[in-house]
Image (tube, rainbow, N blue to C red; front, side):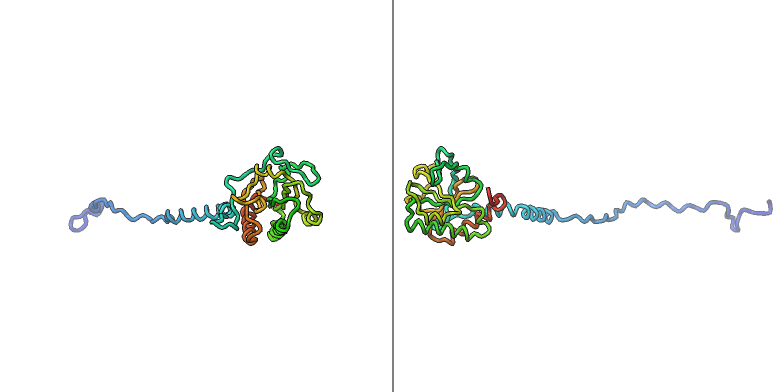
Length: 237
């Protein structure tokens, strides 16, 4: 319609597009990123070390109990034998029972052996040592089932019947004294009879201790050996 004028008062065209706002410069502002909650490296390493120590503790305790039993210059404390001496063969260590029947040394394997050496006549000192050998084994308590008492008779003298009656739960074997040198040995200047000899279940002679002095220290040595070997040695052969 010609009656309509598209110009508003003042001469402005009302149908024209509104002017665009002036362009603004681009903003390159960098906003802060969220912080990641990462555990400290030192704390992680410490936790890992604690886990490793907990896992390794039984093994470490076993080795400490087994090997850290050194006498530190005390003659009445067990002396570790280094290197250990393995049980000889029957040819090198001809064992027999008291009736003269051959006994294979390998039959002794599988138990801890608590050994004493003495002639068949067995004087008062020998009797006291055999008595102490029995009492020390009994004092170990439940672990005594892992220890066998052994009396090695190193001559041809028959032991007295009343003495053998007290050795019913022990192994009494005869062996030539000279043959024992292939396996057991006393401390310098001492006779074979002066010691208890401790042999592990694999047949390795690994300790000697003066007998019969300081029974409490001998008992402590035996207890430590039982604790240190508890993970791999069980009662019975």
